[in-house]
Amino acid sequence: MRHILTATDITKYFVTDGKKFAAVNHESFFLDKSEFCSLVGESGSGKTTLVKIISGLISPDSGTVMCDGEILTPRLRRKNKALCAKLQLVLHNSRAALDPCFSVYETIAEPIKNLKKCSGEEERKTVEKLMEQMELPQNILSRRSGELSGGQQKRICIARALAADPDYIIFDEAVSGLDAAVRKSVLDLLIRIQKNSGKGFLLITHDIDAALYTSQRIAVMKSGRILETVKYSGDIKVFESEYAKTLINSSLSGIKKQDISAKSG
View 1 (cartoon, rainbow, N blue to C red):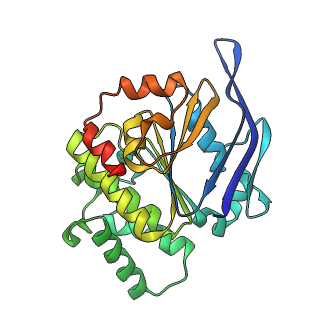
View 2: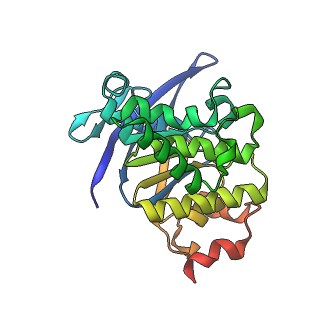
């Protein structure tokens, strides 16, 4: 597989209560196309900071992020539309991420207008196809985000990311805050889309069971360090760190254990 993004020896410091600490401490990470990967860790582990650096949203204090042979920086991401289209980010808070003044259609069509060259008819067909992929009815295209359920808002955010036709999509706590049934349906949706599209998906989550349910590669992060990265196909014995084992054993997910283990069957 081809690495489309490579982060090497990344460090990022913050200051809290007058004390300097490393949110990410000399860590390296790569994103490949055509795989579903997860980065797992509790709140404060540094995973969201690392992902913001990988995405080109913030700069590291040291280390380098490379994208297609170029050093990725926030400035380059803002200037380069092709790069912006290539890597999309779906944030945790869907309601805040959606413009309340935009209709569903306008929300999904926005990246098509800004990043793609196509006719109005092609735009309409693309939006309608994405609605089908998201398993959403066409009759909500005229609605505003405030008229949608939490699960619908999440699916619209995913559709908007897909509208840019990216190589890779990063989901930052994509199912956090959803009830168990909606949560599982969104994860199932992501699995189907990733498999059918061949795009690379990276799930950032504090719920290791969501990672076990979706991913072929899982990195476990704590206190700014990646403790281990494993290839996962249904056997939790591949995890060696005590921290990962603790996360698995203490999981309180609405996704049942038999669902997680179904990957091996």
